[in-house]
Structures are given as structure tokens and as C-alpha cells.
Length: 484
Ligand code: AMP
Ligand code: ZN
Image 1 (cartoon, rainbow, N blue to C red):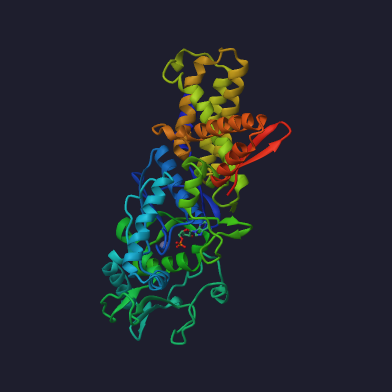
Image 2 (cartoon, rainbow, N blue to C red; image 1 turned 60 degrees about the horizontal axis):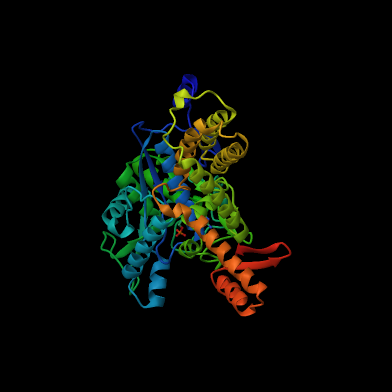
């Protein structure tokens, strides 16, 4: 890389689409030493599904890329461990809300780890921050921005002139589509509860307003400010959280402190299935842990980042099969390149077309990721280089060998940012090994068929089907595909 390009990369700013201002903006962190990120984590009443995983993975990639760009990052991702859904599910199952939340919190960490998501620097739990929430609510009462009715505390929306700025809704639209509880006692239907008076049999905590529990929005305001200060750089979550959750977080935090709460708001578009949002309430979800039982980590990561995070993505077996194919090509290419790693001093090489391709890939990757973390284009850059390397293997008669080490380095570095190649784990070869085993079984089946041993042939076909691998007999021989 020439000096001018290096300099350009250092001064060039990343751009983030800020959903607050609905535009692409230069990313300038408040403190150049450390970028602060708060990401709304799961409500732990069940295992997480692939939709939740998409949002969590995007946050992981944002952090990995910022680190790659030389920033220090502090990431906080909360666990909502007290909520109506948890209380209701625990009652159905006959366990305590605490026990249910604990089990699902542990399962969330386990699933995230299996997906290669690095743990956040802090994973605060709502139930461990009740004093901070009470103190924030008290501040808002003292400022006249909240009122108490029968032991519940409500936020007075008309005290915050900028209410609606994130969701870009006019006051009259603010109720449309939102799950705002009808409560005749509220001064204004838009007001929302920050503290809910205890109901019999529900978990509760002492407060100046009597026993009760926090509302969901105050939880995130209090935990974000406790761990990241009054102003954070990036606040992320799924697009369903923009209103009312994030709008209410802004209202509470900014009225309490007088400071901007989050400088860049990022919202991840939905993972869909059959055109509908994947969600617990829609009953159309695929649990992340089930997907991880069928596909390697890197395949699921590749699939989830194959679209830019602001575009919806459809879950279907065909797309996952495409990701499997892509990962197979990538792993084969990296395996072939590995033996050149460290063998060549890059300075000794002349400029060849493959070397140009390596440089082009690096700058296309950075351009894509610098422009609002465009993982789809970043993958495009990586796979173009994979094709170039493969072409070179077959056509260059070894002339490109000196550049292979550079290609290997560039590919592994960028793939590590996206977490689609794990150099340490041998399971990078899992897919290839599986494919070889299936090919072997198909050979054995073919031999059995030529002996008219239909029992063995059927047994192989049926056993593979139980493992979600479907054999199709064609005129050119048997082929197979993953089904789900
Ligand atoms: P929840 O457990 O419902 O509070 O969701 C945890 C996180 O996953 C939040 O940031 C949600 O916005 C996000 N999320 C939920 N469903 C989807 C989906 N289908 N696609 C993308 N993100 C989602
Ligand atoms: Zn939140």
C-alpha cells in the first residue's frame, strides 16, 4: 500500500447512517480514546431466535470493525431480566421469574458464544440496577417531568419538547401502532410508566412510591448512563425498538441530564421468514441454537451479514445453502494459500495482476465497511479476491506464488473482522470434512445400487435424510442438499 493511501485511510472518516437525523454522517466519537456503544439486549424469557441473533451479530461486527480501524471500544449490552413476558412465562412453567431469567440469560451467553460473538465489556442486568433506576425516576419527578398515581410513576411526555424526534412522528401519530397501555389515570395517553406498582404475586422492590418494579424504558436509560456516562456514541437495537422504546429512553435521559443521550442511533432491519418479521409473537421463529446444530458458526454469520444491516433479510434454506457454498470456496482457497503464509517477503515482489487484486480487495473492503458497515459489499470484495486467487492457481503456472502470502494475509485479516474464518479452530474445515464424508457415503451407495442391494442404498438415503441431508438421484449421478 502506497504512503498516500495509508495517509488517506488515517484521515478518512467512517460514515454511519444516524437514524436520529435520517442521514449518513461522519463518525466522530466524543472521545477519540474510546468509542462507547450501548446495544439493547434480549428479554430473557426464552432462547434467542435468528432475528435477535442478527441484531446481536451486527453489534459484534461494528465493534470488531472499529477495533480494526484502531479504536478502543466499550460495549455494553443489557439483559432485560424483569418484564411482563418473563413473569407470565414463569407462571406458565411454574418457576420463579428469577430462575427463568437466570436460565435464559445463561443460554443467551452460550448461544452468543457459539455464534462467535465476543462478550460485551459489561452485560448489566436490570434487576441489579434498581437503585439507579429509582434515582433517575426521582430526578424526573423533582424536575416536574413525572407524576405518581397509586404507587406507579409516569413520564410526563409534554414536558419534553423534542419528544418524537427519533421516530419522526407528530404528536397525533405517536400512539399509532405502539403498544401503549390504555390507562384512564394518565394525564396524556402518550405518558408511559417508569415504575409499576406491585401486583400480588409479582416480583417487586421497595421504592419511595411503594413496592413495585421498573418499566422497560427506564431500565435501559439507567444502565446505559451508569456504565457509559451521560452521552454515549452509538446506541443500537432492532428497528422495532425505535418507537416507543428508544424514543422514551431519549426523553427520560435527556430531560434528566440536559445532555444528548446518544449521538448515533443505529437500527437493524428485521430478519424475515416467508416475508414476515421473525418473532416470538408471530410463532415463526428459528432458534439460534437449532440453526447452530445444523450449520457451522461461520455459515450462519455469513448468511446474517450477507445483506446490509439496514435491509431486511429473508431466512430460507436456499440462502443458507448459498452461504455454505461460499464458505466452502473460501475455506478451500485459504487452505490452498496457507502453505505460502510467511514464506515471501512482500518487498521482494513485483507488481502482478494478483497483487493489484489484493490491494483492490483491501481498499474495497475498507470503503464498504467505512460506509455504514456495508458487510454485503465487504463480502463481495473478499469473494472477488477468492475468485482471482483460484484463477491464478489454474492459470499462472506458479508465477503468482510470491503474492499468495499477501493474499492469504489480506483474506484472513478481513475475514476475521467479519468472523467468517477462524484460524485457530480446525472446525474451519468442518464443512469440507462433512462434504467428503457425504461423497464417500454416496460412493458406497452407488456400489450397493450396482449390486442391486436396494436395502443398503435406501438405508444410506434415509439415514442422511434424518440428518437433514437429502439425496437426489439424477441422470448424472446422485446429488445432495441440506434441507431444514
Ligand atoms: P427482544 O428479546 O424481543 O427484546 O429482542 C432483542 C433484540 O433483538 C432487540 O434489539 C430487537 O429489536 C431484536 N430483534 C427482535 N426480532 C428481530 C428480527 N426479526 N430481526 C432483527 N432483530 C430483531
Ligand atoms: Zn433498551
